[in-house]
Image (cartoon, rainbow, N blue to C red):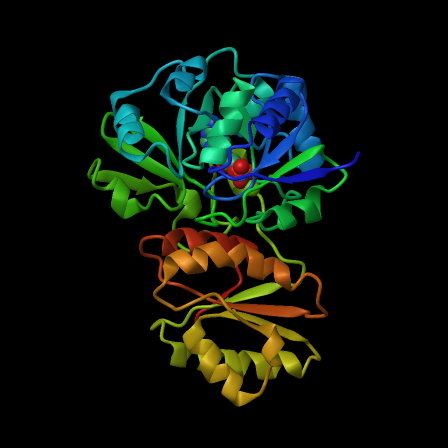
Length: 361
Ligand code: AMP
Ligand code: MG
């Protein structure tokens, strides 16, 4: 299959391409598209056969449920059997935006979308291009991230093409995604209780403004590794977001660039004695210190931004993780961030990328 990549923008809103993309979705085909979080691989969310194509194209385990993307509030009623008062509050506060809310599903939502669960994850993206596509399709669009299962999610159309070229007919390209990490997933477990199943750009702190009872699912508590978790949704248990070379996270108790650099120097020296070729993903501050030491070639020291600029770090992280896939590097190290605010989402993804390999002192 030949894959077409077409540039789109919310300003031009080239009607013809949205018509074509909407037609492909309704015909049961796959279309990759931008959202404000990461690029999605979309199919008609009410068509079981179309959704099975997503699993095939990604090599995704079939018990890992998909999120349904809607254009507006009315579309939620097509697929949710019940919208609780707390869910309504979340919708009013954060939608459209980078949040997915778990709700009881209507029978029209196929089991192949929910992995057999009685609930469905619903998201209303803030991206104009994405909502224009959903409106053109006229149906909710089921979409996971548009990567081969297990790889870092794509945040540009080029990254989508790397994984999906030849597997799908169309990729819509609207440039780099704003946030760069997947949506926050929440369940409304009681009248006033929210459980975070996956952290994202709608932070725990923001959810605490809605209700005082915000819990982290045990699967993402602590070090958030797979082994100590009993996930509620099958998808939470899989190793994810992994670059080709093994990755270790560097997280000193006191997260200063000086401490990170000192730990890195020790780790690099040990790894080099085993002939490892090192790649680094670190802050601007740490880059400065390490570059002066001349222990890793400059081209393999990649900065994700200033330590305190979590928005930039989130937006850069998957691209940087993938950037080593084409090199000869055999051991990667990444600098940890704080776990406050957006940092919780970044650390959740980095922990999974590293398979839980966190070096703390
Ligand atoms: P992604 O593969 O990046 O699109 O992530 C989708 C994730 O959403 C899955 O891995 C699940 O963890 C989560 N999810 C989707 N639907 C549900 C649901 N009904 N209940 C709980 N989690 C869900
Ligand atoms: Mg994914």
